[in-house]
Image (cartoon, rainbow, N blue to C red; front, side):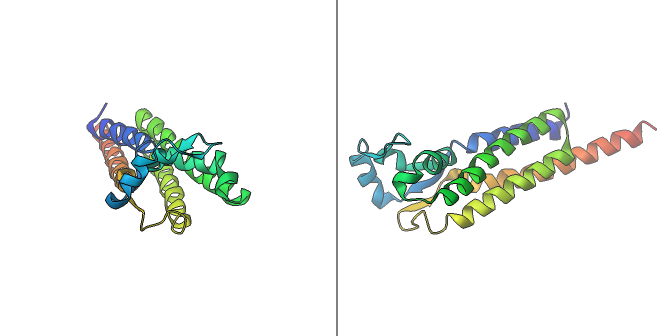
Length: 170
């Protein structure tokens, strides 16, 4: 396996792991409140309590929109849209990992573009729902675009390596 392919596999694996990392984190001045009430149930259908809202991953966002939409007062259409964007980006991240493992740079670029699109739309739709005075962006919020840029660069590098091998064997 060539170096760009190995690096692409690692970055794609990090992209998959980012789904479970904090996407939003409570600001310092609000953390004590989340920690004090950590065992108070807030969304029973989603099996979430106040402490679960201290750091919210994309997995948690998906759970809120799929299981806790009624309790949170989210319309059915909005919850379906957000769930498709959230879990769709996760599924596409797994697909990007498979393309990286199999050395398919063009499919890796296309899949990365779709993950970026889903994440971008999700960010724009969530602008009013996650209060900016309570939450800061978590590590995954910044990791998604960084990983997607790295995957695009590595996929191009994979294409260059593949092309140079073809021409060197002639």
